[in-house]
Length: 425
Ligand code: ADP
Image (cartoon, rainbow, N blue to C red; front, side, top):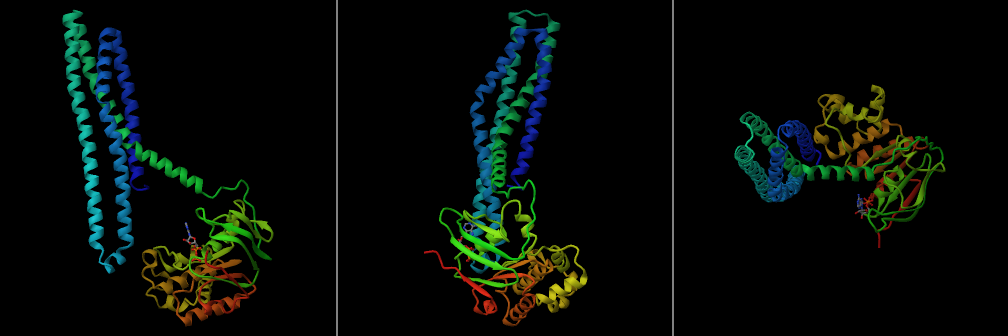
């Protein structure tokens, strides 16, 4: 929608403005024509209105093809994104032909819709031009044979109407184009509405939040749709402790992390930081104190240095190396062809999963957070590197709270408290 539909909204705006501009010019011609002969002007307007009425079926087609084009474009972009994102899987499962067939089907559909739309617009222009000739002939006939207007006046009228009819034609065409592009506009407006409804409310007065004692989840329930994923869950993270959260896949561990970070809000219950409830006013300030590393962390298509500085732009070289050391990443980074200035590739693809995780960890350490959340963050690491990272966490004990989400026993061995989530019944 962002790439395709917004372009079409731009074109729709152009046609709307052209419609207005043409209407103003037509208005001037009409005023002059009324001055010369109100009867003849009335006849011309009647003919133009009649033509518009006759072509109303075409307007319906414009609306339909507009809707179909919007849908077809969305499907096409969807299939393209799927194909590019899942190219590896497509090759492994031999599904390339399936993607190609999907793409061809959508292209064919799209071509038919576009052809129908173009044919419809051409027909509108063609019928209107034919109608304009008939109208001009009728005006000529009535002026000379019926009203017996003086030749000079007839010539002036013909001149005015000959200029006026193409303006009417332009207006009708612009209107058709506008109607055709309207679905794109409506989709963008609808998307904007949904984004706004889902957006985090902007606080009137952003509040500060301190974490010196504990983060508490009090009888928290949360569900994405109707069924709750988390039910009346209590949890306590004391400052300086290492807390583990375990449970089978799908039990809601990542959802608990999102609740703690204030990315989603509980349906019932509260999240308290040192007794202050987490809400729109405090969520931003709170997240500034959190370091988070997920299972497959996101790296920008930039250098290792830029990816680290993203967490804290003012960090010095020494601080960068210390963070890399804590994340057991210093060695491999110094072995990269350009060290800290090596470009990691799109989404960090030039690195292995384990290397990406360690860089993301270094990024989180650099932030010097009060709460560090590691959501299966060492899943791609070998035992030796995982051990080194756990030792780093051990050294940081007391300086920050660490929440480790993992299913590996080895990862949670050093935890002070272990919470276990059960799978939903
Ligand atoms: P875990 O981290 O323990 O594997 P998650 O917290 O990721 O579990 O997911 C818990 C449940 O919530 C799963 O059943 C999952 O399908 C569902 N879920 C997670 N994220 C979303 C989402 N954005 N929209 C809808 N359902 C979701």
